[in-house]
Length: 166
Image (cartoon, rainbow, N blue to C red):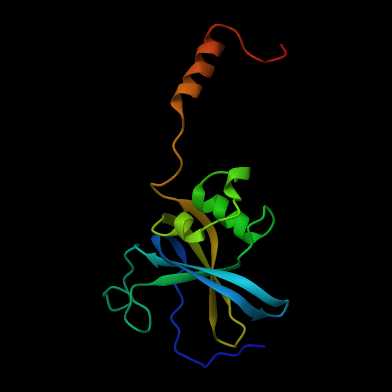
């Protein structure tokens, strides 16, 4: 089991935020309770203005803007948490083309603007707080919609030619 030295930690504030994925870190063959696994860390820097009790911009314990590290196992399958996160960040269901042999998570995630909701829960240690991302969505980089197919469907319905059984 891994153990980390105790440190001063400032959890990301709860609530709705916007941010940018500023780094995608891949850790190959990390020890886990389930054996060696590949992991991915999406590092999200908050762009939401947050003021502390003193009225100044809130930062982490080292004076940096608030950020959140989102950890997952690196699996390129339809199953698993990463597939759900990919769909949320991309703002669309995954297709067979989203599972190439040469999948590059950095290309897919780096510099993407997202919205997210942080929820606080009681930490494992007494009097501590754990922060987790409850919801994700794309901001400004959602896929575009082909309006020509939408127009042709609209034209078909206006002529009475539809696929309804009644």
